[in-house]
Length: 365
Image (cartoon, rainbow, N blue to C red; front, side, top):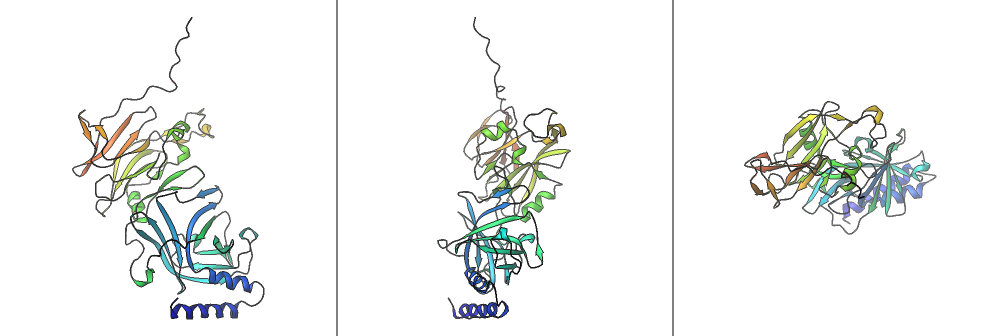
């Protein structure tokens, strides 16, 4: 620890003792100082919809760095590099309220510039010395039915440089899209703010939720870090950067598939096609509210890796030079959208699969 950091720690300790006499002093002082270090995000859960968001077993992770000089940085790391999500100053306050569901939080923190406005003021509870639980709130401020965020102390990962040294700023390196989880068993694509803004410039767009797809599709689908029924991530334009295709709707009138190409760090969004939104039949057993005629997706997406063979629109055979987008209908018919000469082209639709379950054979006499 540098002389500057040692002096800062002593000053913080003196301030905590001077402004927080009485009950809870020991916990407040010890917990505040124990907050310094690296914390890996492992879960965000709770709320009205019983969300349960976690990082994937492999692919990417997020780490909160709390520096003794009064600054924090929230980083995301994958196999390629590290991305700065947000950074700023933090202030620690002794918590006078006391919440039983927070295990008796001894303090709350203000995070200047935190990427979620709701969590810029958060209660902090230590569950042992190596796990913290945060929840939006503080003295004179509280919410109900928000998410609890869990972080565990991380000592094995090397720390990236502190952002206040001028070596990085949030958004300076484009963060690729990620497949994330929200509700239990439900997945969607997470877009960085610039990519989300680019998508919305094409008009209102709402990604289909995982639970809206028919149960046979979800049961047979191969979920990975690169694909879920409503979105796929791959290198479609061949520039070695991640692109994304998303299936969604404008609300109740129109459904469409949109592709966002990284385009050598100058992203552009392309609507592959659009069609009228369909609604569930009144007695559809796959929905719990079928009588309300809910809108429903009529296709799903799969990732086609470079090197696979396919049929072009003129029925000639070809080999994918880049990753491609496969649009699959419920009857099994699929259409490949592939990148060639600066544009996305449409392949020849495949033959629909036989109806399932098949028509039973007549009984032998």
